[in-house]
Image (tube, rainbow, N blue to C red; front, side, top):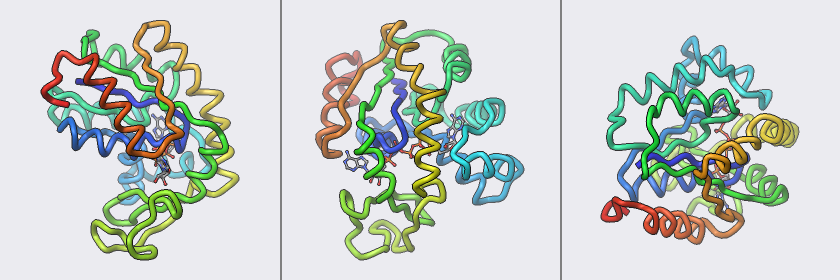
Length: 221
Ligand code: AP5
């Protein structure tokens, strides 16, 4: 099963992908997480990507695509994956189409539909663990202990691109570059639209119900 989660920054792609990955037992691949890992490890790619990410711009296609291909090849692509943060523009979608080679019945593009006020509220309150990367929200999904990760006990931080000005820039970039993918996948009859303004548990239930209803592999759900 191959699932692509599409949606604006803060729609909940990462949050849902992590839960879905545990339920379906297929890997979650987040290009944002892979890039942040490269920045943290100060690799050549990380040094190059950092300046784009901090401004809220997209990292050039060739860098991201190369990184994604080597990640998929080094994992077990046969079991499928949940893709979060890729594709981000039409050129990436076309490359992905080629990469996936053939269309499978179990391919889903799920668009997490969210409104702008919800996005701003979510991103301005997001906290992440600086060590294991677990995601929190200061109000919506707070940690048990103030600023401490429930999972590994490390300190929580705010992402550098979650500052107000950068959030606005990322939303602009989303509208200019990424939103056209909704139409791209609708035309190919691959798009499933889900309202993502609800609580995380309700959103995950909608995704799982959708996949169960359409899957030929329902015992995996
Ligand atoms: P990336 O990390 O992909 O960022 P993004 O797309 O902007 O998405 P976010 O991670 O901000 O949001 P999300 O939808 O995952 O929401 P989350 O679940 O965290 O990319 C970062 C940067 O890397 C880009 O700007 C770009 O520079 C670069 N990049 C990445 N991929 C690229 C590509 N393909 N090409 C080029 N450049 C690329 O949730 C947000 C908050 O809301 C959290 O606090 C969470 O706890 C809370 N929350 C989530 N769901 C709910 C809910 N249902 N109810 C209440 N609160 C919720």
